[in-house]
Image 1 (spheres, rainbow, N blue to C red):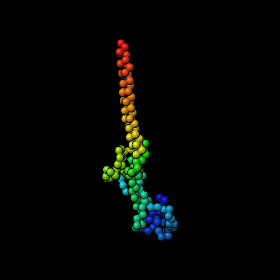
Image 2: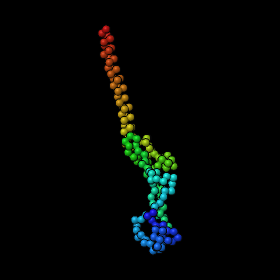
Image 3: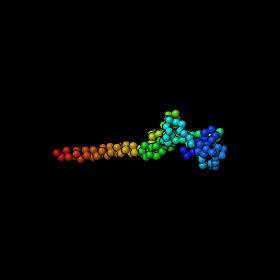
Image 4: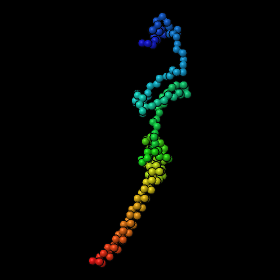
Amino acid sequence: LAQATLVHGICSRFPSRSSSSLPRPPHSAAMVERLAYRRHSRYNTKSNKVRLLRTPGGRLTSLVVKKKAKGPACGDCGKRIIGVPALRPQEYRRLKKRERRVNRAYGGSRCAKCVRTRVMRAFLIEEQKCVKQVLAEKMSVGKEEPSGKKSKKK
């Protein structure tokens, strides 16, 4: 035992001295009160983070720190979606539906830039199909005329 233990006002490490004559350590700001975890887990895990808080009465208590939320990201490019708050999943359940998403197509799932490219791509693909169809009709009309002349030769 490195520390002296007091029994009835007499120091057990130095039997000749009383407790009042022991040299006391100087008070410094570096000495911090140790606190035990108050929750189910007794270890410094990701879900068990605490910070010290001094109460108005002068006591030190531990304040449980919540996990930081990342917020929703775009499924295509991976960037954060603007206009949707970064909350933990449990807190999203408490929000209204209009607060959980942005009011457009692919609202809380894709960012505005990716939605714009998707719409443009879909439009251009449809245009390409129409152009192909028109070209195929022209080619079929063009082939019928010469084929009709050939049939007359026979």
